[in-house]
Length: 553
Image (cartoon, rainbow, N blue to C red):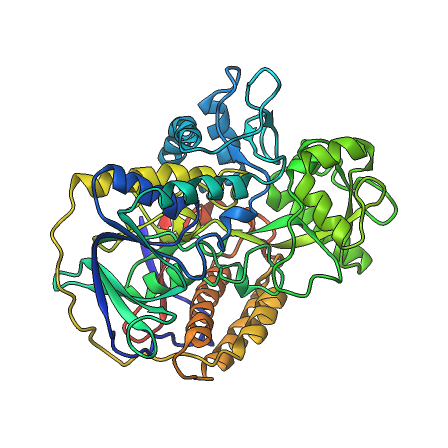
């Protein structure tokens, strides 16, 4: 059942229905436009080329600057003969706390192994035993060893390398770097038919142009930069979700932002991106301890340190509140220097560079914003609520993750659903349509200077721990920041996207009056049956956030 509702937060800002920008000074045409160059975007592009289509990939900075290359742990898939898709589905749905779509989960776990093998045929090299069999490990929430990894703890980098190389081998994939997507172009019948974008050094003096396409695939990644501390790179500003909202698409489950329990806390890190300490380290036997050396997760969950991420993040947060500290510790000393250097070379190098040797010292860690379980609402073929517009990867909400993503399901989701998108587009791709001029109010942007204040406000009031009072205060601050309009350029466009996705998250977090998964309400500490469903968000013609609650069957 669908229930329409308006957000009860009166202080949320009005949001733009499009960005202020110059008229496009140049135009290109392609069959399919893919926005984003991580695992989801590049896999979609390669499968679309297999179908004989011309593909243009636009990416915000360079092809390798997204989140994929930062993924340390690996990819979850049923590759052990003793494992089963049913077991993988069970673990996924337990982590999702009642909000996973069983059909989407079934697609993920049943098609995942074939997608991993395709990735290996494309050139990805995963770690193997001496006999040639794949090394499989375990991470939080998994009850079986089903995580493939590469370079010990450099899986994302290897996946990105293999896909990048495959793309470069195909002359019919056009790559446009340093391109910030602005707004969706629509045909007279409402169908997506391209985007406007800004490309440094292209076309007119300010670089604004348009790429027309018969279908558009969003693979823009996450929105971790709405928080002051995140494992996401600086480019993760929610551009795809914001574009979809401005275009009239529905997004869902945006309140469920996963905080990775173990980001590296070090004074030497001055950027908003914190180094990640993969939970594969805990999978190999590292322990979480407080300042007294006590393993505080023992007794809180049957899997202790390997509980789902929301459980571990909450466990750490409780310790931090009780002690007033800004970190706990990960103890990997008992694993031994040789094992750590061989299995986790990336982590060892980054911690030693900051003055911490994990072979002899405790690693200071704390939760940081890591992954958006929600995003642009899609069906099982990646189709959004706008015809011709698809979404995959972290920007999308396929229904797989529910209220909390299971570890190492993210790269797998990108592989599985990008292939499904390519198959759907290849089956029924209409001819190119001409875009129509957007109606309504002129676009606007906010001042880039709001970014730091926005991140701090979101961390204080809409981070790991939330309440009605904290969310109301955050909404009031966002409204104040939304009044600070700016002039169109890259930093202003990014800041406006941050304001859009932050406001949507706060609206949904305030509306969902329960604690479930990675949404933790201090004033509503229990999961409630009446909230077993999804909040679908949209922006109306006046820039207000509207919500629909969809009950689960």
